[in-house]
Image (tube, rainbow, N blue to C red; front, side, top):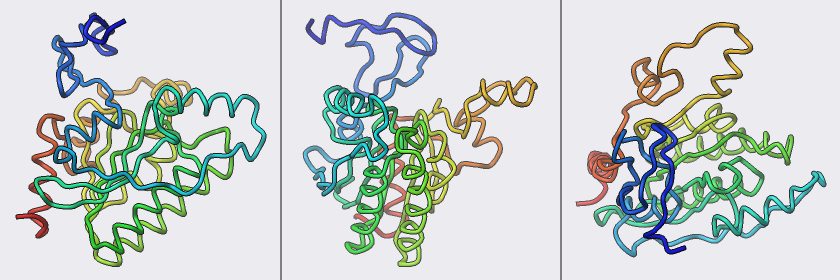
Length: 260
């Protein structure tokens, strides 16, 4: 089926949307809820055209615990996403200003944190520190990858340690929390940055809303775990519409002396 003939259901309002109606920024024309972006779509709306250069991660994910069906899940995710793991790292320019970037991929096992994902994130943090480039991380994750057990959980502290080295070296870091940012990612490096901003409508938290309701037996407030709710309660610096995000990042870079 050709792409222009495809229809999809908006996860927010449930209405069927023609592929061409989503637009460049992938926003529902009926309820204005943004759809999740692929890595390629994120690069296209953020960086100067043709100015993103991907860096190679020198390791490949292995089934260290011989977890049942993990190899098959990895193969399926690689085929569906077109990427080797749940994060793409590289550098590019925003309005001519060079930045290092890590883009987590919700299409690859829901962006879960694995040993290789952790390796890639530490690699781009070190690269940014050595190059003197500001670092922008786009988070999108369901948390630590259960198929890797303790190995996945260990990534939380090692990423935080590398993040601290970047901060001590005086490097600028910006985290953009996208839908969803959950579990071990939200509990570790997602909120540890000079600026923590989020896209509108993004779900951000640790455990899911249903799990919390079952554990506490209480009704949760409207908008719980949304970017807008977190901003209201002082946990974010800003919530930015996707259409305005590139300009917002450009202003932050200029504020810190990067770019023209």
